[in-house]
Image 1: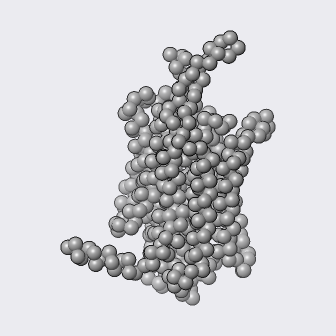
Image 2: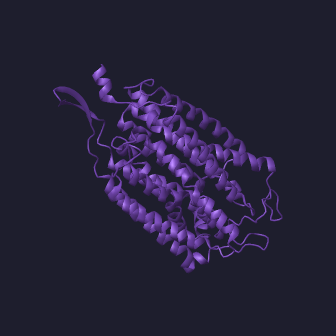
Image 3: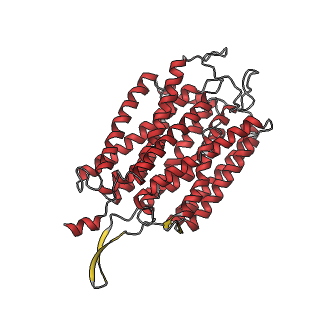
Amino acid sequence: MNNKRQNMLSQKLSNRRLLVDLLALMFGLGAWIGVNGIYVQLPLLVNEAPEGWSLPAHMVMLVQFANLGPILYTLYIKYNKWACDKYITYVLLAAGAMSTFILAFLYDKTTIIFGNKHSTALLSLMFVTAIVGCTSSVLFMPYMRNYREIYLVSYLVGEGLSGFVPSLVALIQGVGGNPECLNITKSGSNELIPYYPEPRFSSQTFFIFIGTLLFLCFLAFLGLNNLSIAIGERVKHSANMETLPTDTRAPPSYKTNSGWAMSKQVYSYLLIMMGMVCFLGNGTLPSIQSYSCLPYGNVAYHLTVTLSSMAGPLAMCLGFVIKMPEINFLSGLMVILIALSSFVCFLAVESPTPPLQNTWLGEFLVVLSWILISGLIGFIKLGITTLFRPDPGRGLYYTGVATQIGSLIGAIITFVLVNHAKLFHSYSPCLLVAAN
């Protein structure tokens, strides 16, 4: 039995080039590592930024403004017959690396806009990295159709690692613990002021590390296009397939003469499911995460952000070892995802005094819920993408479009609820201590 397993593993490895796997993985890593790197620093940033707990909602909304990138790209390939995906990708990866390096030195700079302080350096540089991430949905992933199918999973795992790697480093970095309330005398009266312990290393060091990784992603894409071993793993598209992986002139067929078949109803259902997953995972839930977690403490928020960011890519790694599930199974996971999402939204609405506050059970439940949510989102997205991979038409392109539409709608709705409807309220541990 052991020999049989070893032979199967050897056969799988002989059918692929591990160096190309590594290059595809690093290419995928560059998609969202800039945005995710900033996001996992939120437990350290929200307490100092002038936006406070609403900073995540501002960041999520800004990411949606970055959808200008894929819109411009779509218009570019539609009206420019000389469009070349790889040169656009070079520019995006280089811009992402440079902006992250600059961010390391300017992330705490603020300016006054319309009478209010804002984290302009942080948000504007994040916008650049967000353009890279948003455009990757309609450019990076479809570009992998130039290579054999086995390398798409490597790319997707790399894209998932763009959340895992920053989270692992942020977990090592820590937040120093929950805030302490110091009794400070001001103008003859005593005030309780929160003091946040220092992490193991600064956000500046963290952003320099992320910028270095983005530069390595740029080099990986350079290798994909120029190394002979990578060129040898490319596939030749048949005459009825598009010249560019994202060519909008390709037929949006559900049944083709290439052997791939999917009913129109299932095709539409999967795209709607992808939109809903991204509505929750990219738009709604990240915007309210601070309100659902911070009432349970800074450590709970830190663990939630870091561990949940790891859960997504770990779930996507299952694509290497198990057969992808059927549509009915994905639908069942979607029901569980909606139930857990409703629970954490309830906790956010109940802020600043949610159930089981100041108990280990409350902290455990909120962290566990977010970990499960992130894992489900990653696995469902991988399942849908894998089902569309054999489509010789525009399946992967429409998957990217559904991703952006769902994310945009979720971000807009939540931004309005957070900043205008005032449905969610901040938590100040020292004010509660003073009240008690």
